[in-house]
Image (cartoon, rainbow over all chains, first blue to last red; front, side, top):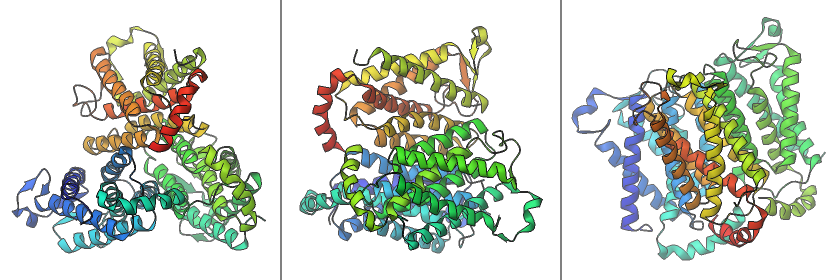
Length: 202
Length: 202
Length: 202
């Protein structure tokens, strides 16, 4: 593994906490509702127990995938980590806040913000690959799971809102950045090499 | 011309597509409505045929104007182009989403975001000049055209919303950036010279 | 003083004008209301006379505090100043626009944007210290003053909205940046030294 056990545990905890926070906003605003059939398991806050576990696992494994895809950029400061961590709950909250607004404009706004997140935090292709992976895996998992449903009127994309892939794309970009920031020092060689590349690319 | 025929055509197509998307959001949210007198021409989506043509022409010519105003910065990555392209539909969508909110706060928000767009994408005076040009030309054209109207209550600025100049300013800044990114390699000399200036300015 | 008299006066005027603008948005949207007991003094726009004076004094003194905390970064361009000045009214306007939305999601969004403001404009610890100082002083002053009240339903944090500390934190970060940009040239020595540090940190 290119992430230490501590980093993996931290990313798992962060993803689980973020999942709970985002889900709470979506349930409280009526954006999503869990179906009665999903109520057989214990709930944490507004989510069934398995939801934060799933998001936590996805977060830790996507960060590991990022480190195997390409060398990382120079480490970046604490600001980068804080901004990356803030971006996803911020976008989640925004989708909850515009839940009753026209869906077309809401969708355009979320895709635009996902693109800006990619520009602000991403390193081009590797970040885009993690974003696309998160979007595809996330939407397929949700459609396949069939345990909750989005509110009528915002679910024309096979049962999920059209802005959902953009939200998950931004999540993937953020996790890729966190993976870079948490990379084990064993991989510092690759990182030093990449520093020159990073300087050129930016 | 400092833009190749392909770049001019691409910018025209991009502007036309963006104009259709933004207009659709504004019409769907009731922000604007075309007057009956404007319905004599074929419509594309929610816009009369001439609207995307006009926005496309404005996009291509403003990008050319930018290249004649001042040397360009170093080329920038694909992220810059994607972020620039995303910013305008994002702002358009936001104006549609806050259409029923207090106009004063909505206006302050859009001007603030236009200023942040200028800081994130612009290169100072040349970008500001393109933004101002777009704002003045756009608002005058709309007021003079008299073929559509903004919803009552959001049109105190001579029939257009007070946030419209800021939206067009951001559009002009974005087009200036796209112009820089599309500049013909014949102008690479000017660009290399400017790279030092760009490094100092940022 | 590390700020010239002209800079202090300018920051006072800027803070006072920004306070009037932000307060107007909050009063017009029903986010805040001044209690009858506060109506004994002359009002400017929607605020009692002492409110812009208080915000102006806080702005000028916090900028001076920033310059005593740590050396400044290299000067930065006009874009930085404009973006810093735009960020606070933008955030104020946003809190007014989401006044009727679910409070949890609104709060998450404002904290996320405050974190992004810190990343975009701040220089790490000194900016965060100014932000924390503004948040603590601002919220305590408001609770102690007891002259206006936030709308029922958005005031669970001892009478103020839970997003208010984040709004004031962003204000503190912005003022710290403005303080850096206005630092007297007498302190250029410290700034040059810091340029190397700034280059390393970013």
